[in-house]
Length: 143
Image (cartoon, rainbow, N blue to C red; front, side, top):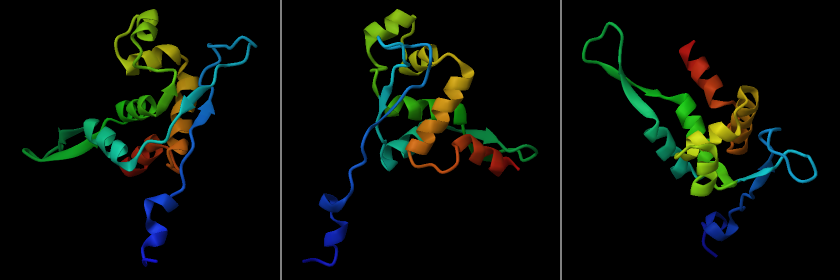
């Protein structure tokens, strides 16, 4: 047995999908909120999402100097979209029913209550392994 055998992929614990009902405005036949299915994203997927939602901004008072800034609302929205298994936010028929053509816009149309959306964002971040919400970390860095 190799000294690395415990680190082999076969020994890695599989992370299971989970269900969460993000809005009270979509109800099942029994009248209870519809649960959506969410999957864990990989570290690589998360890095791609963060990179896609990062921009360079000028540093005040320092001409020609720039710093990276994560567009946190877009990053979190992209993380939620990437996490959702059911409903399929990329389904054209579902998008058409809400009059949108983008999975992120569909998410916002389906969970259109700001309080519910914020609760969903917090739940997804915790589900993805973040102890503190990304928005809280951004605020912490600002102070």
